[in-house]
Amino acid sequence: MIEVKGLTKYYGPSRAIYDLEFQIESGQIAGFLGLNGAGKSTALKILAGYLLPTSGSVQVEGIDLLASPERLRSRIGFLPEQPPLYGEMTVRGFLAYLAKLRSYPSSRVAARVEEVAERTSLVAELDSVIATLSLGFRRRVGIAQAIVHDPALVILDEPISGLDPVQIVEMRHLIRQLGGDHTLLISSHILSEVEETCDSLILLRDGELVAQGSETELLQRFNSALSLRATIRGDVTTAHEALMALPIVTNVKAEDLPGGDATLNITLERDEPESVASALVGSGVALRRLEAGHNQLEGLFLEVTTGKGASS
Amino acid sequence: MTSILLIARRELGAHFKNLIGYVVIAALLLLDGLMFHAYALSDGKNLSSEVLREFFYYSSGMTGAAGILLSMRLLAEETREGTIVLLYTAPVTDWQIVVGKWLSAFLFVCVFVVLSLYLPLMIVVHGSVHPGHLAAGYLGLTLVAAATTAIGTFCSSITSHQLVAGILGAVLFLLLVTMWFTARIASPPLDDLLAYSAFFDKHFQPFTKGAIHTRAIVYYTSVTFLALLGARVVLGTRRWR
Image: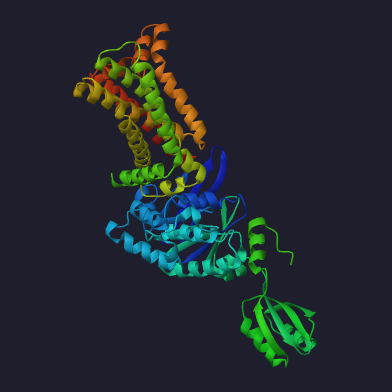
């Protein structure tokens, strides 16, 4: 478990983060969200052991940052936004060097490097010189270096930044895989990505924690409207009436689509898509698609981090 | 200790894969040879020991230059490239980082020192040289290499530009070299302190003549330690910034 208490950091007179307090359960993937300047990078650097806090404590599996900094650092893997790589080394040499430096048992380093390369799809590139690799592979090497010593906590700062769509899908899959073995803390500006990969969210504003919890919990806590989008074929008025009869539905907006279909944007009080589906099917229309409404997380993010709701 | 050796070995590998290192060593060896030919062998010096003394005198300057030039990138480049994060987030102390980095540059400068051996070997072939004189001179060069690479490491820790680090290192080195002159115009008791601080004057001269003075060893070891301590403090301070 990762436990952060009263974490505060000042750069001279200016306050970067103040009294941060949160916990992440082992094996969870937590998303770290906030606007630029919210203090995310400072918090991540402290958690990674790069910076020391002005006050407060960080504990990873019971190991305290200030009491045993070196021991704690051996339990953490960190990938900054720009992967830190020694371009002149081979992938194998680089990973083996870092595994040894981070106190991984020497006798098992070679096998661990192979295992991590397998996991990050780097086997074919193990003997390539890092400087010759593409951005996507470099980011993979960045992830590989963060997990090569089998840390308890892996911190990834903007892991998909600069990747193409295929690489993003691969990276998402990789991050999901890592979640089982490590606790992950991911900072990202791409909200849809956070939505896809994270089990819980930690939101910062002006250096302070404003919310922590799962997306659903936060949407409910902040009364952010849950929304669904249904694509139907049939009588729109009947469907509209059937939905409005449900106590959890607060609003329905219909929009005709070419070809006889219509889209219904449904605002809910609670996350109960099954009730919506039953009502639509019961009204006699053909339900062709039912999906989460767009911008839910975006709306929550804007509301919590700026105090303004989403415009859409 | 293992961490220091790991850092040093990786860094040494980087030195050997970096063209700048070879260029610096080749250029300084060329200059060393030219100095040897132009000064050590001139002015009608007939005794091998006199030629060897002159060789060590000029070679000490080249070793000092190599120490500064080959250490200026150590931490500055890591800071600039962002790879310093790998060391900062590893379970190693700031001392281990500094000593590992310094050790790599020191060993690389030692390559230069060893390669310069062909010049005194020529004196051995054509004249008569006492092995003790040769050993003392090379001990002196090694100590100069240790101290100047430590100064370079310190300068490299305070900036992210290796050129700035190199200039700072050269200025600091020259300040120490010219302390003997400053000591002459200073009043007591400052003059004694400045005279003791002079890098070559009293400390390196005995080595050129084949003598080993404990106080010279203490001096170069102290400069090395203080410079490395400075670098460690700079690294430690950055964690609080």
